[in-house]
Length: 352
Image 1: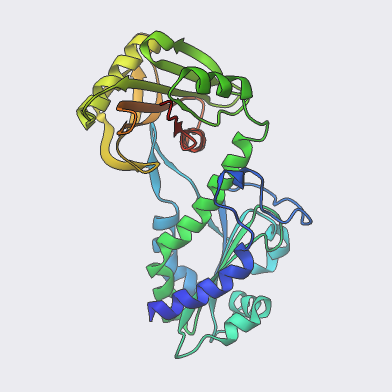
Image 2 (image 1 turned 180 degrees about the horizontal axis):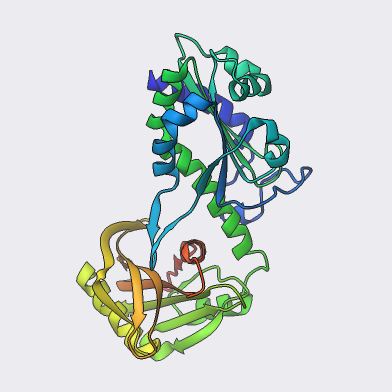
């Protein structure tokens, strides 16, 4: 049965997602520029559901779509808000919309969805009891609209609950694309990228607003800072170390992060109970990841960070890429995501 769901979703998605590019050129938005820009507030998911669907479904939907990410506190990427369909004209151009439709119902939300996508609604029945249609830029640019349809309330809720991870991933992917557009809106720091290519065994697509914070070429370390008033301070650093045999481990990464914090960040440190350690994949490398909270006992400050350690077999070089955010005034999650977007442009250079 799930296969049938997936097939219809794929068929519908082709229409809405055609033209997307997964390469680095994705910085150039693939949205429909003939449409007005969405009204923003992309941290909100405007949700429309009839009373019974909402009463039975809201707890599971919120638990999944409002999932928490640990920075210095537990932050959420999205909040789920139910709105009345009678006010759709007020909200239809916001960034994220979610509709739940019981095809057998004539309640206001279900009736509205059947009028908006009648062909998909007509396909719902015994052979296809539920499906999802994910629309990009339906009413505005940089918008994601998801319709979930079930032949009755039970099938609607069952399908919704089974696919909450997919629903979250659709909204998250769209949010990452929006953050990427902001990160690279002003272009690249071409001068520093050229310096990296000439002096380092690696380079990355550094945005123009990132400048050198600390450079220690003799000890294979560089740190960049993006500082904009009223926004989080964002630090991105790279450390590399010639290593004949791969000795990168969680312990190696943790110790290197402590050393870097002490030497270059005025004594920043980590407490093991504030740090999550895990195996990870990073740009095709088998990597280790640390994430959580950093703090400075001298200045009584702190923030959030994520770093990756990995080994390049061809270069015989170990790397640590570190992302750190300082912003006591507010949320840090989107700043951390922006740093990871930049980090994911890392490329090792073969200088043989």
